[in-house]
Length: 178
View 1 (cartoon, rainbow, N blue to C red):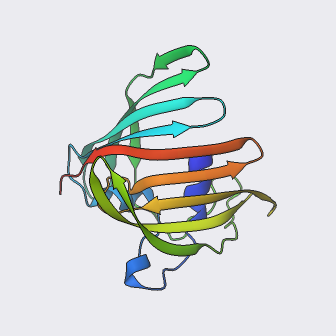
View 2: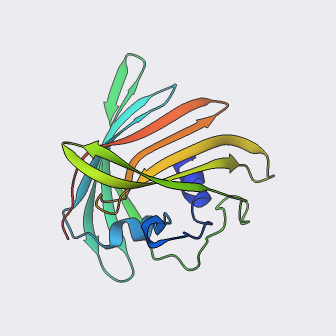
């Protein structure tokens, strides 16, 4: 839910320069990579820690098929999910409306650049920072994402804050086949 909300948030801004040209659309974040590309990540929230791996299984002009496996730790318990297929289709329009209310949420992201390191590799990242609004236009949190075109799925780091707490998504390592 948080990722979906944040993803839709960053679709609405037009970049001001070629350096800021990343506008996050899941299809675009995977389409330049070939079969076998993968990303390993960790998501930490107040209630759980998730470590996962997403692999590009197949792609054509109409569909990108990813597979994700996650290890979830909640309190003292831990379990691994079954491999989960994720289907991405090319966007029909940009920006895409909210999946819940079918409207565009207001957005005025700030952009910048920063270099981050993932598994010993230095990456130039575009940083997008914005306020997150619910379907009624009420502020429900803040989000900041570091994207790199060199990483399958583009997400190098993402931080969201909401009344339920802070969620951090970090890329741990990746293999980009192009």
